[in-house]
Amino acid sequence: MMKKYLYPLILLAFLALLPLAVKSNYFLHLMILFLLWVVIGSAWNLLAGFTGQVSFGHAAFFGVGAYAAGLLFHHLQISPWWGMAIGGIVAVLIGLPFGAICFPLRGAYFALASLALGEGIRHVATIAEKFTGGMVGIMIMPTFTSKVPYYYVALGLAILSVASIQAIINSKPGYYFVSIREDQDAAASLGIDTTLYKNISLAISAFWTGMAGALYMNYMGFIDPHVVFSLHDYSVMAILVAIVGGVGTIYGPTIGAFIMVAFQELFRTGFFGLFDYLGKATGSSAFTSLSDAIHKAHVLGFGILVIVVILYLPNGVVGDWEKIKRNVFRINPAR
Image 1 (cartoon, rainbow, N blue to C red):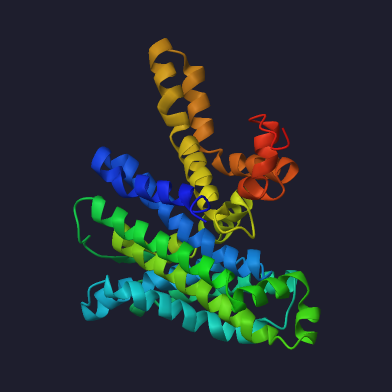
Image 2 (cartoon, helix red, strand yellow; image 1 turned 45 degrees about the vertical axis):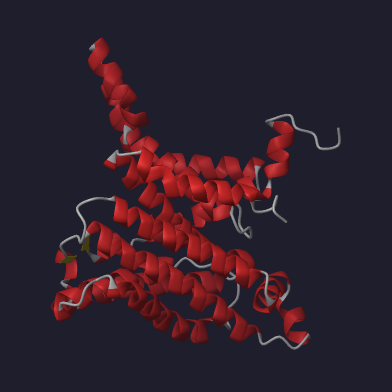
């Protein structure tokens, strides 16, 4: 039992002590993004990976969570930190009617309905200018000048989300979620209220995603509909985080979040400034042009990464960890 939790405990101790050793704001910013994606990826994985209801609309829950925190301050001067819990609740209030209407749909039809949810709410936020600020967005003053408090709040949110999802999966509702994923008709024939448990899964998933959106509002201090309801930046990215780490595994989104944030930053910075440095050091314009091309190629990089993962690690890094140990590290448990 102790061995089972040894690596997660070592990781938690490392993450808790990290700000004491690392003073770089840039590195702490990357770690905050990584922890936010742990929350979002784990929330998506609960609904899609464990319950089998693939969503393309998690940007809707992220965005309403962010707007709940921002609008409380903008209209009522209530601290956006109160909006963290309220953001999660508002996301649930958006998710439950959607689930009640759309859960009779199955497979690709449900996925398309969730896509329409995200895009529909984005248009509403854009049109309702007097309430949301429209495309001008909402700006708040950050509470802290240091990134360290945000880091610990994000770490706490990530721990709570992963621990709660693990507890749920190991309980009766979690077994029902998995039975619905494996065969919904068979689960219904055994007396499981599949619509009820799909809605429970959706509510939990929406709550954590909304909480992540509210923390994003507190941390970044600015949102607009294009930023927080982005199909590519949140709905698709949540799927990629889970696919790369391992769909249907507890710790898959955590590993996937680390890989995707690092991969995105690798392209955004042109391999951490390597080609800019080579261009200046050699005076060659080819390195500068290559650096510009890499900055714009992160979507292509994501596509290639996902294709490679699907071809060689169809269950993700965590799901195919035994295969990685056997083929990459040459560790054969049979010997």
